[in-house]
Image (cartoon, rainbow, N blue to C red; front, side, top):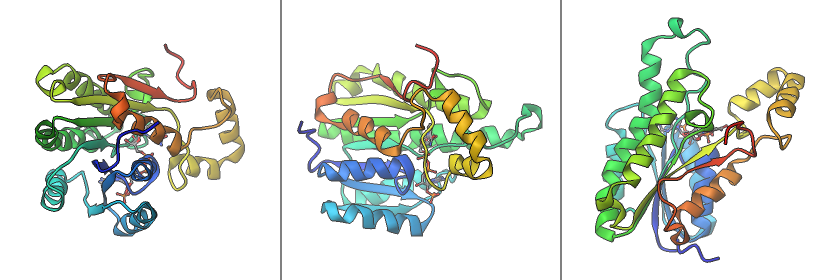
Length: 261
Ligand SMILES: NC(=O)c1ccc[n+]([C@@H]2O[C@H](COP(=O)([O-])OP(=O)(O)OC[C@H]3O[C@@H](n4cnc5c(N)ncnc54)[C@H](OP(=O)(O)O)[C@@H]3O)[C@@H](O)[C@H]2O)c1
């Protein structure tokens, strides 16, 4: 199937690692020019090296999205270098392990920072991307949420709240006729547990390998966690020409982990 992505331009926030990098790689494999942003220069350079063999144009911008002007600086650079943006993947996020078990003892600032990193980053990028998509009469916005921002509403409240806000952002925009009739779609992808080297699951596994194995066996019907590539494949389809009727969806990619319908 030709996804119709050749020659399009995309920004994947936090595209230098994990789900974001897998998405950037799969978009590049489809011939899409890809911009990424994240904090570590070393990670950005390694990601650009991975994208180079696909022969597409790349842009890698250092940015800490906890800083309120960072998204604007990234979008300024894209406008300067490319003058257009067709696809936005709001991937940056996380914070599910921030704060502590006891809500009253967790500082209020944690709620704000997790909201900023997830929901506000998505708001900031989306607002700046829309004029480009409207003038092109085509656009795709896909936001990476979590099963804990919808189907499974348990867990640390700052994370559930921030992910639910991202899902709500996509859903509310998907109903705005003036945007959708300009050819723009808005969708969320809600992963379950995804195993990524160098992140929290690997730490847990190293600390207690047997406990980790028991947890995976108990909580994951497939007997394993997901991979970033399995999430990216769904994201890239939602970015495609073929997904033109998929708008306002919140697609669960969790191997059956969530208990709810
Ligand atoms: N992994 C899971 O199990 C899972 C499950 C459900 C949902 N998700 C969601 O999937 C998305 C991606 O998560 P992931 O697990 O793929 O994460 P990851 O492997 O840790 O990658 C995160 C990416 O974002 C960048 N980043 C982190 N903090 C940043 C900041 N303040 N400003 C700019 N860039 C930043 C990182 O690079 P730097 O560190 O260099 O900045 C990296 O490129 C998140 O929204 C997360 O909530 C993940």
